[in-house]
Length: 376
Image (cartoon, rainbow, N blue to C red; front, side, top):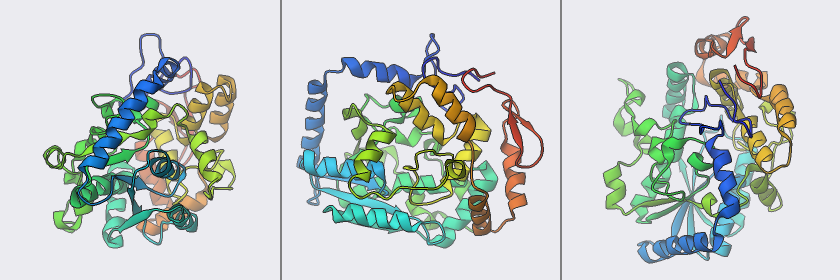
């Protein structure tokens, strides 16, 4: 395990590759922002806007997948007010046991800014069964829900004949998941290759109990379907020099976004502006930490180091204090939802703990072998 020489990105992130100088892709990309010809990039953006306005068949110029959170609110307002487009927002709703009132209120706040929005709500029974299956097959309850979240937007775009989809950040450039890199920095048509979607393979979702007809909204459109629909997914964050968790959070909080106020150790998040619509992402980030040695707070810290909001040493202290933490109440509520005990939860998590990175001292008790900032 190695850390980037500039930020605190680890080389354990799936799909990442450091350069010969030990610097991560996100830091390399950040350096290039100082030499970007932003006027030229705006011309590229304008050509994409023109594509959306001249190729829609429904009256909507584009589609934006939204949660009501910081990124989607900022994107939606930029598309409407700056690009002068008419977007159709698409929101994937969580089941009642999972969604937070904050999440519901944030979607309502976004719609009040003057948008049409379609909410997609899937069978809660199928959702729960697949979540349980993802947890026991991969120790990742979100594996199936991510299929639905990512697939629902292009599926609806094809159905409504709206060929332009705006997405947020390019994970290849801004996080380092090089699997999703397309033809250029704005091209999002390789999203199917991201680690979570695994190329769109749905076979693991199927069983005697779950048929293909039960999971239509979980199926990412094939490359042929997307080509036939002339579908174009574009990363909007590529055109913003100040795309970041903090900048998007500040922008949206000033426009009605309701953020979290729980203690940082309950969330593994010291700012409280991510995953506002449900609580179980915090335990999935804890599990990610036990698999790869980094969690949610690493994303904040790495951006803040690049933006010189904090020093690398200050980032190290934040990671030591909060990375991989999660409140027991969220573990209990998740366990209740999928019908297991907390002990069964930890037995499954224990199977996925990376023993190259952690020493096991018992269920739920793991000591890192690595030194934050130095690695192994």
